[in-house]
Length: 146
Picture 1 (cartoon, rainbow, N blue to C red):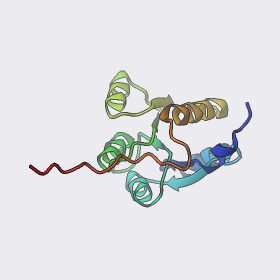
Picture 2: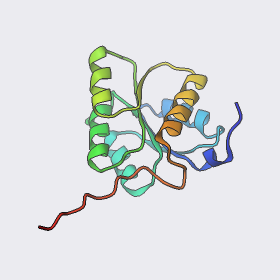
Picture 3: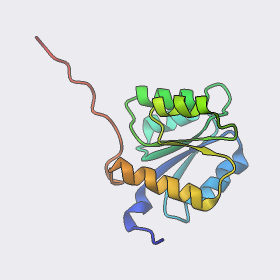
């Protein structure tokens, strides 16, 4: 499947405490045209999301301190609406329910292959309906004066 030129400027955050796995995901996504940012913890992911306009985040569920799900909830509290793909080696119905309730795009079970990852990333970006020039940020709430 061909790459569209605009895919080249999509910014994807890869968050996993396993450095070789982060690098593997980078090696899959960058040749496909995505800009990648790497984080080893939920805290690092939140810091990066605060200062970089991201279009999609990949979050490992099993992170030190903040879990992927907790990180997702905090991203939403920061008004960041980019699609989030939660990754886990231990997929349960409970985790899937909680992830969907927290507005995850999907839960991917590790290990997964290159094709599955690229398909989910592209699907999430397509459904978000935002081009690379318009990051997913909710406008601040309007204050109503009476």
